[in-house]
Image 1 (cartoon, rainbow, N blue to C red):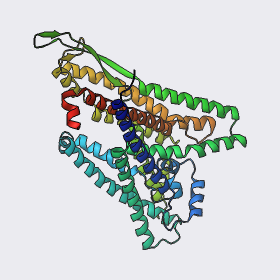
Image 2: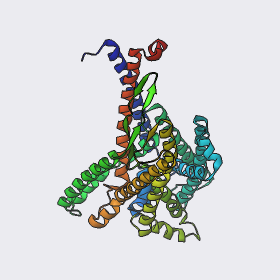
Image 3: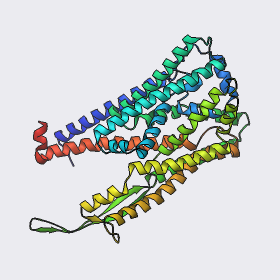
Image 4: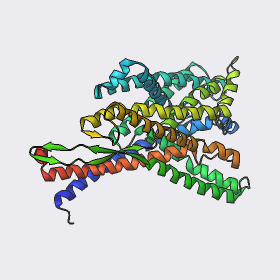
Amino acid sequence: MVSTPGQLAGNQAGIAELRSRLLFVLFALLVYRIGTHIPLPGINPDRLAALFDQQQGGILDLFNMFSGGAIERMSILALGVVPYITSSIIMNLMSMMYPALQQLRKEGESGRRKITQYTRYGTLGIALIQGFSLTVTLANQGLAFTSGPVFYFVSIVTLVTGALFMMWLGEQITERGVGNGISLIIFSGIVSGFPSAIGQSFEAARQGDINIIALLAIGLFAVAIVGFVVFVERGQRRITVNYAKRQQGRRMYQGQTSHLPLKINMAGVIPAIFASSLLLAPASMAQWFGQSPGLGWLQEVALVLSPGQPLYILMFAAGIIFFSFFYTAIQFDPKDMADNLKRQGAYVPGIRPGQQTARYIDDVVTRLTVFGGLYVTLVCLLPEFMIVAFNITFQLGGTALLIVVVVAMDFMSQVQAHLMSSQYAKLMEKSNLKGYGRGRR
């Protein structure tokens, strides 16, 4: 089939728009990575490096992973996107509890703008609390050259500004780029740590700390986990939907059969991010304030909530299961789906339209969410089992791998959607459907 000049021009225009969006994403992530290397003023780098050497494998490593190494370097973006994610969690929870916020969600674009504004205010408040806590910790740990009022003011303002900048940058990527901005920022931060982690694993194997055969087996196991994640994320449960016969004019159209696709893991990577963020907040604050006089018991709290501890594993698993159900309930309403099917003259075979259809869809979604939550929990807890079995700290599985794979798949699907939309727009223009082409001219 030979493409016409109009089709080629349309494809080139779509590719040019996609290229500009991809370049913007690349530029934004480059700015983020540069920001993670700009140090906070007044910090002693030698003492900071010694502190991280003493506390390897603890909560600081997990916090450092989400910040893309900004905590380890104590950069101006040390708080990362955690304040924004925490604020989003709080707003989602409140929208389920308060009818006023539920009504805002139903008001369309204007309601979403108000909720976004409230989320930004919450981000500012949480960033102020975390920025103050981190600054106090830096002063108490002796990591600052001078711990006077000037250091407190400059550090708090810098950390809060960095957190707000990260929120703004994520929104800009979502609006002007491709994919979800916050997810891509977390993705780039995690991926940036992979080369050094792989290098450390090979160095440990060279020194004899890890058997080379075991290291190769772990690598193959990681590839198998990636394949398993892709397989489950692509999996769907298709509910058969029949459409009744309809008459248009003098013609009778035969009913059609379609499918209602439901993903196995409808919540995606959100439960892992939310559960990690909620555990990071109290654990990090307990560790930060634990050095203050009279608050030594907070150090014990931070130790109990460190990765690998039984309470941490239990709370992390419970958080993933909870947010799997919570986020699925926010994104998917079986009653609305059943009402839409009823208005379109569609029905599930053997199920009465209306309330029974909603109940049937809700049962299917509940079973899928149980399986999806267990699957996410299993993948996220793999590093804990691997640390016990092989004595390695490189998180080949877990939250890091799940975020990387799921975000990469979502990014590729967004790219394909942009290409398809540009081709479809050109097809409508060529066919002059309902004056579409004339309107563009």
